[in-house]
Length: 69
Image (tube, rainbow, N blue to C red; front, side, top):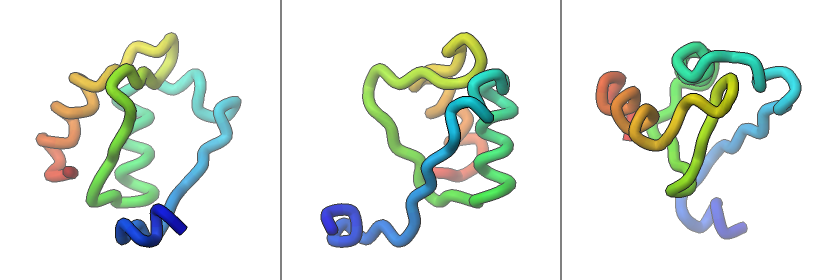
């Protein structure tokens, strides 16, 4: 209910086992191609992609490049 109250219409939970070995750029490209998000949010210490190589700086730069909030 809280997310809905904030205007969130869809959420996606990915299977970690299926995405854990994807590079950060491939992970974000996959998210963008499959879901076309207008917004991506995460915690301040979020890491993603194979070996946790992606971080909030990488995510922010990617989002700016692709007009994602």
